[in-house]
Image 1 (tube, rainbow, N blue to C red):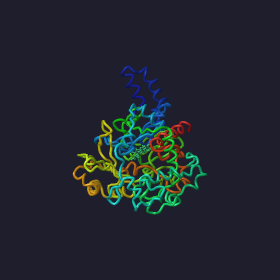
Image 2: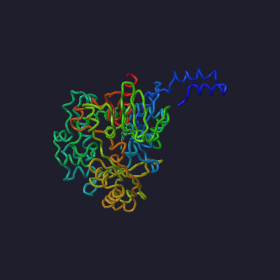
Image 3: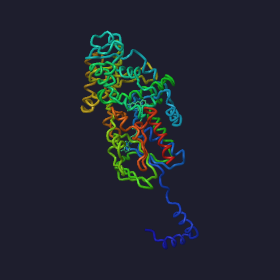
Image 4: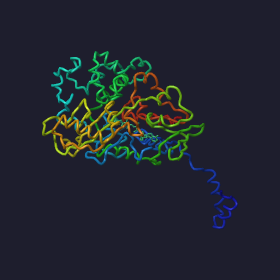
Length: 479
Ligand SMILES: Cc1cc2nc3c(=O)[nH]c(=O)nc-3n(C[C@H](O)[C@H](O)[C@H](O)COP(=O)(O)OP(=O)(O)OC[C@H]3O[C@@H](n4cnc5c(N)ncnc54)[C@H](O)[C@@H]3O)c2cc1C
C-alpha cells in the first residue's frame, strides 16, 4: 500500500514536489474509465454491434471464446478455392452486409453464376443416377402429379413458396399469426403429400431439424418471404474475394477497443449500476452494459444472475440448432469427364449432397467438392468421427460411380454440432416456438442485451445477424 506521506516526500526528493498535489488530485478525480459495454462473441453480430457503439463514443471490449473471430463465418484458408464451412453468400438485398464489406475494405464478387454452371446435379436414389427428366417418369416418384418434375431437394422450398399462408411475411411473429405455427409435416400433409414424399422431400436432407415434425411451417414461410424479397432486389449472390472470413477480420480491425480471443464466458451478473462477465480463465470484465451475441445453444451453459424468466428462459433452454456436417474433398482427375455424368450428386445415402466448388481463377475449374449432411445423416457422421466418415463418404461415392475410384481425396471434416462455441448450424423454431417465445427472446434482462441471428425478426442469416446488431446498439444507446 502506498503511504501518502512517503509518496509526497519521494516526489519532493526528485524535484516533483510542485506537481505531486495536482497529480494526486487528478488521479483521484479521474479513475480509470469503466467500460461502457462488454460485447460477448466476435461473430458478425457482435462485431457489428461493437463498431456501432464505438461510433457513438462508447468504450467497448469484445470477448470471444474461440481463438479466431467470425463465428459462423468460417473459411478453410488452407484448401483450394477457400471453401466456406459457414456463411456462403449475400443476396442483392443485403444492404447492411454490403455496407459492412465496404467498411471492412473487402471486395465482394458475384458467385451465384458459379453454382449454376455445368450440368445440373443428378439425383442418386439407391445408388442409381437420374436426371430431372428421368425422375419425372420414375415409377417410384411419390410426389403429386403437379410436382413430378420437382427434385427432392427442391420440394419444400417450392411448396412453401407456392402456398405461403402469410399475406405479409413480415407479420410472421405477430400474435395474429400464431395459429399458423404448426409443423412442416402437418403443412405438407395438408397439401396431400404422402409419408414417403415427406421423407424424400424433406427428411433425407432437411434444412431444419431431423424430420418435418421438428420445424415450424410458419418459420419457413417467413424464410420464403425474405428470400422472395431478396430476389426482388436483384439476382446476385455475393461473396468475399479470397474467403468470407476476411469480412470478419476486416470488421474486427476497425474496432478501437480490444477483441480478446480465448475468453470463454461462463457467467454474467447484473447489479443496479453495472454488469460483470466471468470467463473460464478466471478473468472478469465489468461494464455498464453487456451485449450478448452468443447463440442460445451455448448461452444455456452460461450462468446468468439474476436468472432469466418465463418464455425467455424457455427459449434459451430449448431453442434448437441444426445438425450440419461437411466433408471437403479434392479431385485428382476430372472423373465427371470420364463417366460423362454431372459432377454434383444429391444422394439418399451416406455421401449426402455432393456439391462441386468452382472457386478457381476461371469458373469452369472445379476446385473441390463439399459433401454435406444435414439432420439425421449429420448426427450419424458426427457419431462416426472424421476418419470413418472419410472412408464412408468416398466409399459410397466410389460404389455408385466407379470413375471416382482413387480420384477423390477427403481433406477436411467439419461438424457444426461438434463446434463447442456453436453446437449446431443455425437456430430454428419448432412448432409452437414462435407463438410460445419468439417475442421474448431478445428482451433486455438486467444490464444484459441480446443480439445474434436467432433474435432477428426482419432478415435471415448474415443480414439477420447485422439487423440484430443494429437493434441492440440502439437499445443500449437508448437505455
Ligand atoms: C453452413 C452455414 C452456411 C451459411 N450460409 C449463409 C448464407 O449463404 N447466407 C447468409 O446470409 N447466412 C448464412 N449463414 C448464416 C450466417 O453465417 C449466420 O447467420 C451469422 O454468421 C451468425 O452471426 P452471429 O453473430 O449471430 O453468430 P455467430 O457467428 O455464431 O457468433 C457468435 C460468437 O459467439 C462466440 N461464443 C459462443 N459461445 C461463447 C462463450 N461461451 N464465450 C465466448 N464466446 C462465445 C462464438 O465463438 C461466435 O464467434 C450460414 C451459416 C452456416 C453455419
